Every structure is written in C-alpha cells, then in structure tokens.
Length: 69
Image (tube, rainbow, N blue to C red; front, top):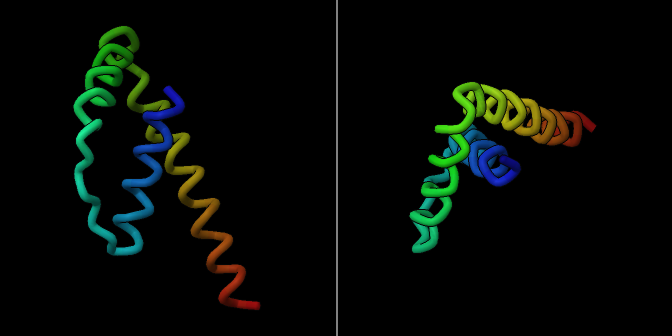
C-alpha cells in the first residue's frame, strides 16, 4: 500500500510541477501488485489517493513557505 501512496504522490507532484513521467521497465510488476491490493480492498485506491494528496500538499506547502521567506 505504501508504494501505491508513493507512486500516486509522485504523479500528483509531477502533474503540479509540469514534469512528465517516463515509464520504467519494472512498472508492470508494481501494477500487478497494486491490482492485487485493489481487488482485495475496494476502498484502497481512495485511501491511497487521500494519503498521497495530503503528502503532496504538504510538500507543495513547504515550497510555498520557502518562496515567501
């Protein structure tokens, strides 16, 4: 689950910063693992997305504070 939160958070931050992600060769293995998690817990994607959003907002907030200083 932590990997899903991290990957979603990275995607959120890349989108916010205008950075495009390059697929890696090991993404298929990650996706297979996530599918297992998501099949076992229908709310997992919402939980992971919520946690990823909070983490991304925290990091963006740090950048905003630094820019204001």
